[in-house]
Length: 139
Image (cartoon, rainbow, N blue to C red; front, side):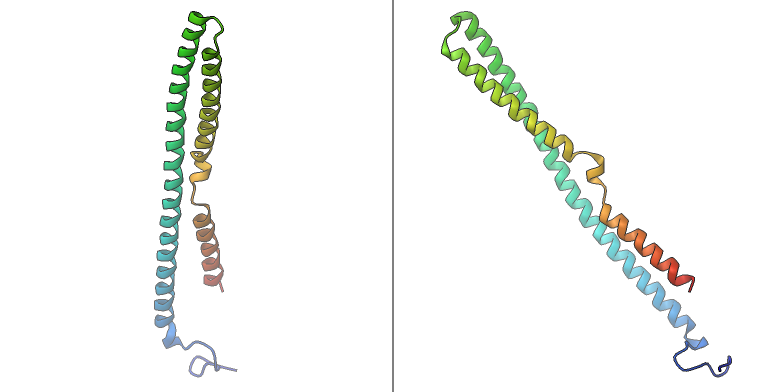
């Protein structure tokens, strides 16, 4: 049995309270800094992916312009030559370019989805840390 003057072994001493509070604040501060560093790193990765997505959308747009140019050339060639192989070849090239443009556009658009840009791991870690702190404060 213990009293205030003679606490049981292993029990924190009342004089240790400021030290425990100081340790808690230091650990919480260190945890917050590490979580912020993780969030910063994760957002950097997401920003890189967004930049790649934007590049794909722009490349897709440029390919659409090239395909439209080829289609225009094919239409002119078809009108002038009425069935010469040049127009068929131009249409094949245009179809391939449009297909590639569509794929690049759709992939780039998916990479730009806001859901893909959220720092999910950091949010999950912060929520877990908050729960852990809440549990330890109520003990």
